[in-house]
Length: 304
Image (cartoon, rainbow, N blue to C red):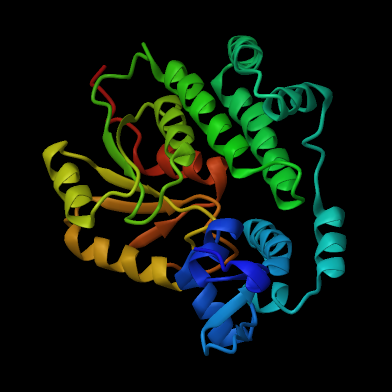
């Protein structure tokens, strides 16, 4: 728990992780390798972290999600990060997305759900994901990093979006001979929205998704892949858990999943032009996943 009394501005590493959305393992690696975040030593001898570092860490997470390397980003101060993110920000704030964001700020669930369902019908699933869902998530993340939205807003939005995305998959007609993919997140990963977006992308590519959920033990992921007769396992990695520790877990999962089944990882935690563990395919964004599915998971052609 956070410190009380005069030391209330100091956080344990667990509290810092909860507030910033970055896992404790990743924070420890950064501290050891780059000297950031810098701990303070209390008179009691305990190591604590400054609560004032939270906004800076949120901006670091956003920069990493855009493909920057930790070594370069962690050397930047708050003003430099603001400038970097401001220069690179696209234009997710078109009026339609801004309207959705206003519903998020005010917890107007009915209005938000109706607007998104209408957009999904009008635009089709592919455009809806890219022109509504992805920009809305980017704006929400930016507002969270700036302290204008809180975790409760993100969690509430995720619940509504998951319902909408499941609706896009409901009733989908897959081609004969459609291949199967198991979708999951690794242990300690509690962000599941990426799974639902990946599942919609699978359906669009003619692949049958089996979503087994978040925070899944490795043995259960491997067992599900065998029991579903899956051709691939797709793992979603968020910004909060991406890093060296996750690469080790992916390598462990690769050893447990039969070599005949592809193992693919994507999401905000898969950053930059790097290679993953041996035998693990890294994809960047929905476009990268769609490209991989079209190339590797197309259903076999039926005889004419």
